[in-house]
Length: 263
Image 1 (cartoon, rainbow, N blue to C red):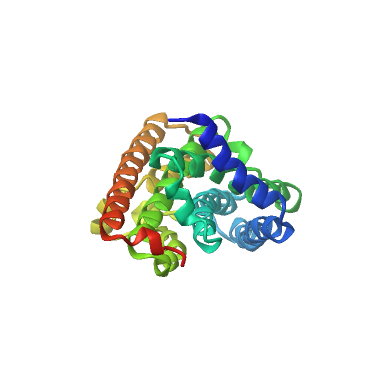
Image 2 (image 1 turned 120 degrees about the vertical axis):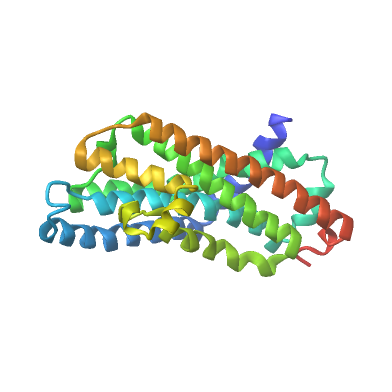
């Protein structure tokens, strides 16, 4: 793996963002709107729910973490789509660049796009709603890393679909996380789901992440075994995502569809 190539690929997307104010505004706008929307909902539940009466901003904290997951996945997809829309996709694969270097570059750069939107929104939540995700303490680092790994995994799976089926698959990029959200138990405990759905939901790292978040904020209990379990599950899915990407690339290459991508 050549780190100079990875840096060059990453730098291309960084310059693309820095040189476009509308792109920066778009990255900041949606997370901020989400924070204000869920901030008022969180405030309502804080004032009217016995479950949340002693914990300010549980729902808003969940919304911030979920938006981090959403932005990491979408950022990965959008950078790949940028290559297709700019007609640079063919050049990307003609150049002496390995698939592993492309995956690494997109993975590293996605965090840059994600933080541009998330940091201002999270900071605005402090003065407007008195809510700070930093109250989670040290476990916050591990929760964010796990969410990021899973977000990149979803990005890899969608990107695999783009390579295999073409740009028409891009709608799945927006639908994938909304499909998983009910099973992720982001805003409610896993016990709310029917028992058969709970079994499926626990196969996702999201349940363990958001259950742990609520344990910390509501009961002031840190269960690192649950965090480790979530990280392990995310890593397993990440490996599956990488394998799927390689298989999709091989299939598209054999069919000769890569050359027509973006044309």
